[in-house]
Length: 352
Image (cartoon, rainbow, N blue to C red; front, top):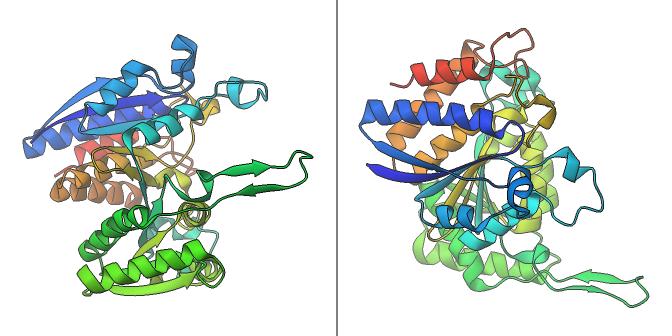
């Protein structure tokens, strides 16, 4: 298989962790006889410094022409700490999501046996946790009409969804459940919100019409947040709206004990972008201390998107082995002396 991949290293530790993901992808290509062609481009603070634009036209053109986008990290203190900055790195990420039509955000939440002791929750509660969140990314309250009264004492944000917006992400979540343990949980607030009642109605109709083999559950978002703490291993696939997904996906990200291990993807009808959920960690840039595993697992998610399931599994198995043998950076294992490149080398060398 031949694929063209747009590589956007971004800011901070982005270039370092991207390099390790490419190292692993090159090993996969060699072992499984694929060809991955990479085209590099700037986005974020580095792009602002060069062009004044966090998402230059050339970067967008390269991304639109690719089979997928591999993205590192975004953000820089000189913009983050300047309240008067009119152009910010994060605007580039929002712009590329909109331009590529990336309406579906996918975040796996998984615990590793060797790291259970690092979870803020008791080990018996988190052991075996392995679920994935499907968050609608381009609709809802974040994009609805916003109003502020003339006296600036009253404000509102409209939460609006259409049947089409709900159906297109529900299809993806149901399909994912079929490939996993065949259970889907819709998280909403249908006892209060009309928009949530539409979500529940549309998902129920879709379930009856096309996915009645999938076990469908419903949880109000407040109960879902509680259940994620009480027994996160009960979930398989969680589907929810933009605002609720933003909140509970961050809740899920700390269950495993390290944010440096979690990948994500943002998917549209024609395009897809893959990135770790952590930030640019500018204070660690250039020191070789960045954990590349979330970036490497994001590359594995990209392979799954290409229907290269065997190849993606080879990466996840190599990552499991690295953690089992404590072959990771000091953020995960404080006694470790391994650097970013060492971890990438170990994982690449164990692709089989």
